Image 1 (spheres, rainbow, N blue to C red):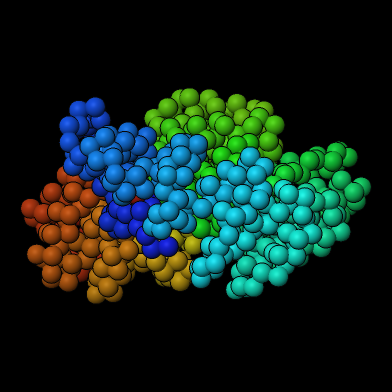
Image 2: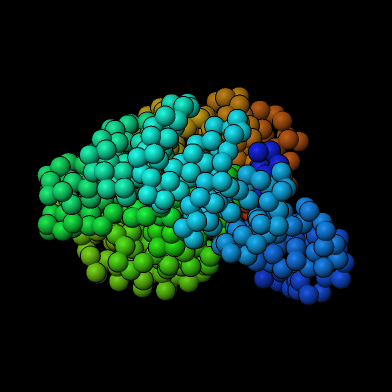
Length: 611
């Protein structure tokens, strides 16, 4: 199946339970959102009991509706002021909502509560550091536990407190002597360089930042921290008058993470002879950077609350940090909170090199809220303001794709390829891929296929392209063996991608290899539970191998599963009559009702960044 992917232009047991309760229960499937007619208006003021307030607060918490959760936890405390669990959850909800000072008050009240000590120590310590009470910060942040991540976090924060107190050499020495697993260096090298810069030790800063940018593991482990190190080194060299060394540092970063907009802006600034200011200029910004580093590295599916907690605390210390705001916006999108995401993107300072990224993502998110015309106008204005910026075309094209305006989508990517010129780079594969999709949806296969093949020429083993082209070839009964080989390669690259595994099962089905089809489609259903198209495919395969009761069950599941593009009338007909007998003279297993094509995959915002 041709997959739908997200588009983002950019990277203690008790506490974990408090932060992540409800996540596991929602991980396997996502319930369809209620229609407007089904929404029931709820007012926290109507709650008249402790149990009502508590249960409603937990529901809001699971839904990541932190402001409502806060109101309801406070309501619950009016019935039971001494309830420790409620106060713990209130503190966490306040912090996740960005209400740092209110969360701090709760942290002070809970400082003796061992269940949330991991959080209260950081919040109280950073408040002291923010107020330049560095001795207090060092006392509060002292940590002697066994957890490596906590030990690293606290040691870096303690060191920044020392830097704030004017003890830069001691701070650098304490971090340099920190013992731990190899991945510590991904974080310590950057922060050692940043500490040395704030302390005025340029030689030491250069040494550690050079080590950080040559650490290839850093790109995979903590790409956001790696790029901070690259930019810090480039700014250092530019300030020292070493223009070429500054550009060389940028080239290293560009080679690791292509099309990173802030890097492009920094290069342009340095080429003009400017000497851009460092991102971290004091201890508070450095401490904020610690939580940004850890939060960015932990940023993956299922960890949104934990990551948000780190990033919101970081934001409280360094409210102008653009990369923190963009990461928070991305998390809000993952949690299906587009309005909240828009607020984060709009908060990026206008003079930030990352402002354009935030504007592009804001436009895409506007479309997701249903404001398609506003999104189109916003993104068109960005194209007009800089016609050379390929990302603008990709973002605009993705909105047109979601609106199913494939003619305009094709025209947009035609213009983008004109900007790319006659010699496209490897990173330009996504433009050809998206133009191919537009023409395929317009039923102009003679124009679509060359674009898919050009995308593969630029990025030969790109699984999205292999899957899409392979699925199309199989679905049209053209070059079946080639299509099957492409899908197999895509599955090898992403064996846990339910959409791609579905493609392999469907390819076997089209070739009449029904037993193999069932094997792959059963795995696809497990990987991508609740997808209507995959359920429909599996039902067809079951029917062909004689498992007719199971086929009807899967078709019924398709009717109640996610998938707005399925043909419900055709599925109902199959439930009533089954599939027609196979034509013994057919070369492929053509069926009477071909499964509908799933939604177009939006373009990845950073073509070279793996999703």
